[in-house]
Image (cartoon, one colour):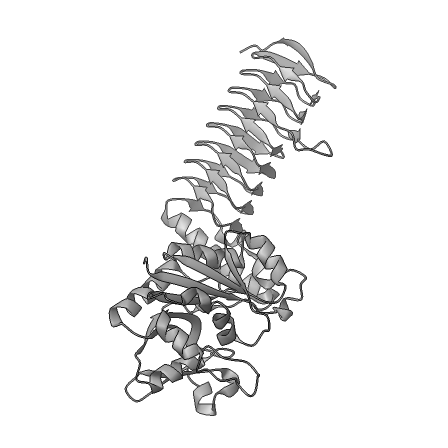
Length: 419
């Protein structure tokens, strides 16, 4: 797909979100909406991606950074005008242009690749992604002629009564020959009702010129689901969460209760690991094979858990690594900790990792035993085969030598550990 550029339309106001945060910067399963769409663009082979922003443009630009081509739509005059704002990037480009909405995080890579492939094979001027739905309310309808050719897309406000009964909807994803897109944009006229330029009008213009308009119909109508308010955000979150859980189960992970398990994107879980109910696993977490996680466990970003380790009831782990064959069964918190192999973390253990200014590290080496209710005031180091007594407080900067026991408040080195 080395002749493809992508335009992402993300200029809308998102008024119904009722938020100071731009709509596309709200998160779905650990990633912002716009990141989902950008990842899609990369996955289908975009040579260059242009994000068109308008309302709260500065916030979106700051979030995207300098490595993403951002185009500002100065006045919100509709989708055709938004595409036109990015059209400079298509001049003298002989390839294809994929256009997607910035608020559709449920689009699948496989579906978009199918659309692009169909577009190339049929050599169409434009290929449209459609879906068949029971309730088409709110969507543009696909209008066909007697030969089943697409001859237009009718926005709901402009549709006749018979057109409103059409169940085939426009998903809002298109693949164009760039030259046909540029030519069509210049011919689109302002819609007199909304005072906007509709990109959908280009389909009728192409059809009138006997240009081929092709289509791909997705089997999953949720792919075109656009987020407009907080209810939509929750619905998209639920849909994507179910996809994530199903994929893990296909890969050999046991999810005891999918209804109460929340796993973000960019999580990796090894085969034969069991995730128990009421567990939350955030982005950038890595879990090995044959682990047991939960119930009521919270794994926060940048946490790694190696093979054959159990992290159980009412536990939280953040920015930490736990080695192989470890036990952390109940009521404990590890933050910014490096834990070796075969370590026991007793009930009620807490790493006090924040000193009011900085997050500090705790290092627990192989075969250590951390007694129940120990408080480890980071930074601390607990040596190989060492132990802490129940209820001890290991103060900042303390080091427990390999093979020794620390006990008391504040903790002191008391004796060698007996095995």
